Length: 270
Image (cartoon, rainbow, N blue to C red; front, side, top):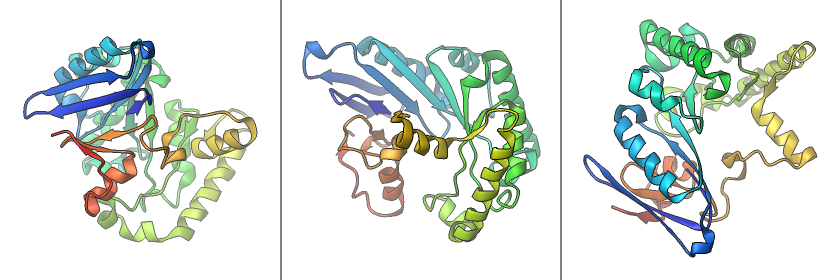
């Protein structure tokens, strides 16, 4: 969730519903912008709640942007209708071709094929800009950066955000070995950048994170990428509301609380 500092958000999650209100310090502060990202689990399992929250946001803000983080295993008519909104984009994970998706994500080629077919369907219908895709580089693809990059190019993307497995959550146990092999990641990343340089002789393609760093250094262009400034000023314009109503100042704090004690939790609205 990306939240302007002049606004306070309260969310109360109940077993089968929710209560969400916004307070602002003054009527002079109306007309603010809100960016709200729905994470999961799988948010599209409750399209009714997504629609209700979007209606509330539209009531209190003149301009909103929404992001739905989905595994894209299901795109029925109701979900597709929600995706058709101009102010909504989809964030999903694409770790590479079908065999890589099966090894990393689904454990099943049929499910992986469904996900990738839905990616093609949505980009064909709404344009490539509708989907923001992110790979996680594990031992299944770390020796073949060219395969991963070329797969993204074939899907129509003009950038890729290369990242290793974070030492957080379930990945700590599932990918413990590759997390510890920094030199292996460094070799992967250098090979990936060399491949991207070759691609740019004929067409534009970038590694998103490196591009963000370069633009911030040389062009003073703010990307809005929140992890680049994490930890940011205390709840200045960003916060994470967990499923149980706990409020954290960043994604990292929420994930850390799952592994340790919830020492980074600053509010609990339940």
